Length: 200
Image 1 (cartoon, one colour):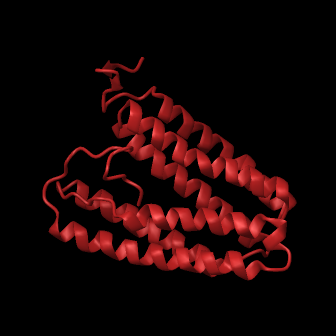
Image 2 (cartoon, one colour):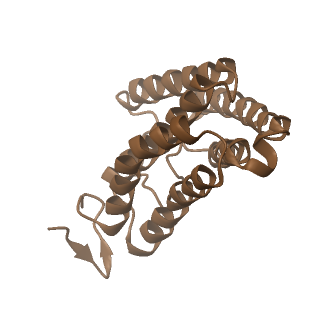
Image 3 (cartoon, one colour):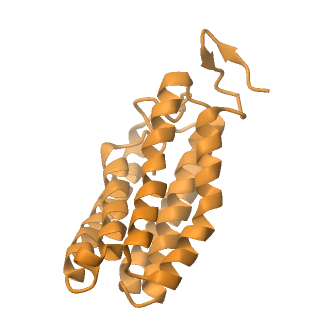
């Protein structure tokens, strides 16, 4: 049972509404990926992706109102990575996008996740940058445009252009994380829903 302090959940709370939404996102991921592989470019897949991707904003809004938690700080970016990388891999597997941007984005995520974990154990803070959320938004948008029949059947360049912009944002934000960690002091409590969102 999650505890509350002054109407908000404590940072150590696990069973929170925001975390529940994030878990639903994680559970929905396999179904979303199967939908992409089975239907490809279709309004059903596009609308389903929009619905699943929009829950990122919903659980962030709930967390800001009810209190950020350390579990949410872990689960939220994990759900983002599972959904985005899974969707991109599914698109590549059916020939709707190249594997190269998928590999670049996945490689960046692995490197930054390992690096943040390593420096975190040494007490070094790596605050999130605005580009981190922006690149996730571009990735979500790219997947949506590739899946929409209006832009996916004959104008894949729209989604592909947005996807490559998201690759550039991912690489730049990754470089910023590496530079920021060299200047940061001891780690402070950072949770989802705060100004320093842990979205890598």
